[in-house]
Image 1 (cartoon, one colour):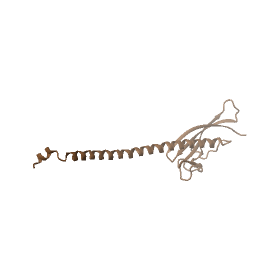
Image 2: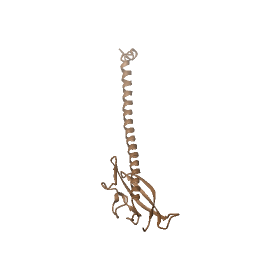
Image 3: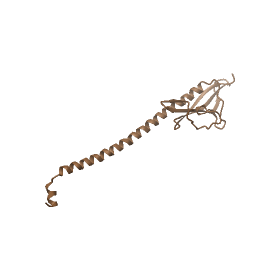
Image 4: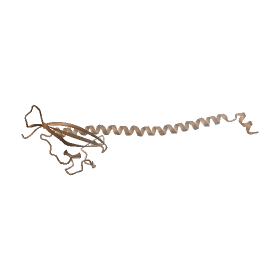
Amino acid sequence: MHLLDIVKSEDGSAILVALLILVMLTIFGISSNSNSNIDIQIVRSERDYVQEFYVADSGWKDGANWLDGMSNPPFIVNATGQIVRNFGNQPAGSPDNIFPDGTQDNTISGVPYWYRATYNSDAAVPGSGPEYRSFVYTVTSNANKIQEIDVFLSKIYKIGY
């Protein structure tokens, strides 16, 4: 039998077509699996980003509560940066943007956060006596040493009573 006779007889053509389809499906399956793994990594990163954002959002609220609990304006602990409370309530002279493990102000769902309050300015409160002053602060909250939020807050204190 010649090669031309074998091709014309179509013997085994169903197996050949089935093998070709199987190879194409295998390639498609491997490609889909690889894409799925990439999609899972993207979704995981997005979830972590959103979680860290909301944790940082909670952190500035802790800073606002800290300021709200003060009956007098807080003292500046770092004269160069006008900081009245450092991240993790670290002492004066500590670096302003360092987040050592174990110094976090709190943890939410396993994500640590720190907050810092910085004095911006103060001014007399219109319509009030001279002893009332409005102080403006920036509260910076950092979640997981990555995500950071700045919020401006104002609080009125009665000075010298």
